[in-house]
Image (tube, rainbow, N blue to C red; front, side, top):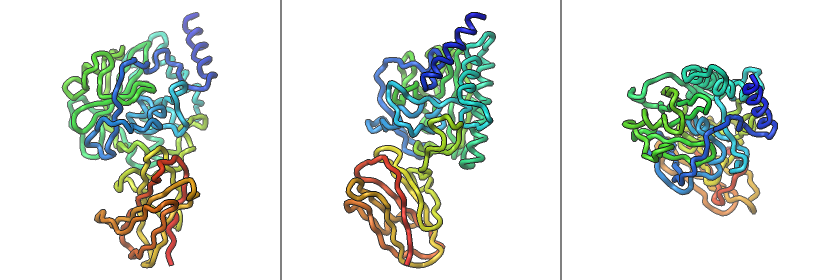
Length: 353
């Protein structure tokens, strides 16, 4: 009884400190030097490269990486943000109670691997249900097996747990390798203890490393692998709640549909690129530009047709200005970038004459 009381007291103390590190061994840093991984936004290839977005490294943990959501709050090594299963399910439960509930599920008397898996799975499914209802129909999830094929449009992730320790997630690439993110560490394709490349052939044994040896489950998720896809859901106390303004993806396939004469956007991290889809209702000359202070920012714009052919572009200094005749009912795409790699809100304007 004293031990349980002590654990609860310690958990509450950590909550008062302002960030969710109540799990005694919450995705511990391994001390191993790891190369970061960047996805290509289209499920297929994943490469090691230095620009893995330091902006994102401290804004997502293993769960955030697996489902690809991140905190817009500026993260750092002293206070990284760690998404928790269940935090997006708006169910009148405070974030503090969610964390305490999770702590007891993993560390409480009588905790079992199956029980922890059931708990984390239930909270994760609740997240997907909320995000599907409020954000988009790509938020689907279903149980699968380690050897089952991955249908087109889906990704496979794995959940593994350790009683009295923690939970951890892995993310499968279409080339048959797997990656994961331990707390504030960069993404890696190496296993926790043996430092071998994780593949379909060894994933069953690799997931048990790092004291996560009390069970594993696999899931198919429909959420795309676009890491700058934000949301506007979650408990009000979360750093990943309603602060996001950018819903534009990094590829044409995730372009935001435009209506009216303007749209708010955001460059969420250095080198962020946003795509928008425009279907004019009137054949006319359109003026496409942004509303940033040109002395500070350097916005570039490219306009494509439905065949991805470039119709117009402006890479001049300051706000880009494009005048182009567009046909009613035709589909066009607008790519927006900032040459100075700024992190800033902006407005895309597209008026016709």
